[in-house]
Length: 336
Figure 1: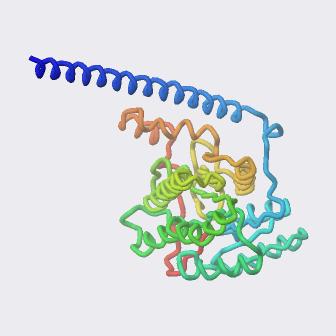
Figure 2: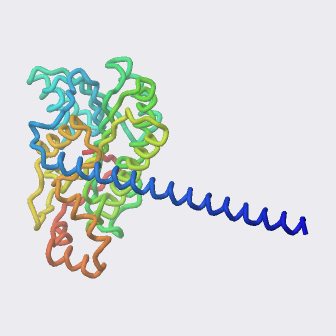
């Protein structure tokens, strides 16, 4: 009889303990939900306030005296970035494979009274990137801001694309980012300061006609950037700032013949200005135009057939790309 009573007591005790444990878990879950809700409300409010705050009221960090390295900096948006940064007294380092274009941007900067540091670098070569990274550190100093801007586009359908151009597109547009970040991130971590900027594209958020290679590489840069950001934050490296910029079509040689129906192409100077503003404000995700950040995710929430109708009949995206120039058949490819 005593044994049976002991068993009942143990059963009741375990039941009470389990109820208490369940109540504790419920209380913790409720507390976490409340905290998460408060955090979400705070960040949404912060985003809304910053979105509608006039630019002159925003807190912007100066780039004066900062060592800024721009890949693909001898042409297009890259050249505009270089000149604008030099005008703001940054120490600008330019990497590009086109030596003639490098000489041109160096002379433009000199005419304006600025000194920039130019290096002819093939960013698709891992060893070359690492070698010139050391040269930059010795000649200019540790890099504060890395802008991965270099990119190429072919403007052909998949079956028209030569195999080597598909590989080259990924090497220039994506894989080079791995080499540059691996070359400069260790110094940023040791100094507990740095900023990595990835120039992607709206085609990295939505597929584009005649950009099977280019669009895929830009999707990849978005994945690379977001994953690296998560990695750095997970390890507590919040002092490394990261900015990704996804612009609409830009009026450079890369998109000759492209005639967008929905809205005109952006000028390189305007895109460069927005990128520098994003850097100074330490923005995380930027689309050009700004409203595109809200429009591009809609494709996940509407029927696929409706998405096609909107792209083809309303936005006329494929038609915009019909006349886009194709690359010249050559083994030598220069990053824009």
